[in-house]
Image (tube, rainbow, N blue to C red; front, side):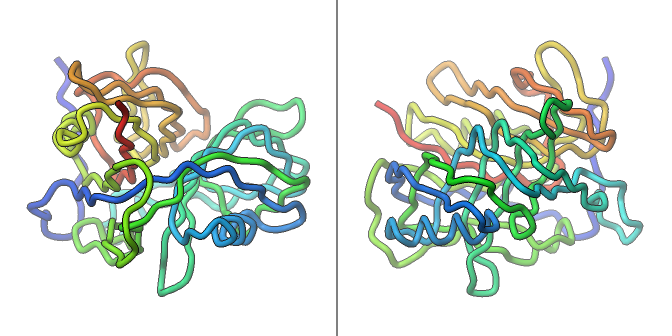
Length: 277
């Protein structure tokens, strides 16, 4: 049996291997305005709906310009991985993406992973550069506005990165009971999500993050750093089931059901658990 790879990070190991803050998740339907960078369009749409934090699912979107990065080799400063140079597609079609809205330095900040292509071209995947990607036409999207907690970019001594971290807010929780979670490096996401979400019983799982050598039930993406989008997920008494898409250093995406207990977090994962009856 092959040992699972463990990445070495530059700082001390945080004893708390996940964070899970209660929040309210209110379903929203938003219109993202054409001609704007995704960042501006998302912040404006959420603001008009009365939210400064949330998670969106994007699909079937057209872009005049789409800019993104994929995982890159470790930069040599102790951090376990990095990013590639930006890739740019003109006249792009976004097939699917997930997007968190939170805060950085007291200003709105987005984190988005997704799948896209040029017209008629092969499917690609990565981390969307939301400030440099321009919508070609209005886009109607669905998701959740969050209250009671947000994701805030904070220095992370363990990994050497600045990362989204759940932070409590003063807003009253409205909508469905939910948990805003962050998972830490070298940990089993299935085990952590089952532990974090135990108080919810049944829950929908949304989010994104990074894994080491993403392991699917029908294959493995052999890349020590991968960017991952959770395409669908569920927590119930039988455990955690997640369908995901993943891209590694070679830029070739893979999709499938994540192999339970055979994956490990690379740098981080930002996950929203929404209670279901």
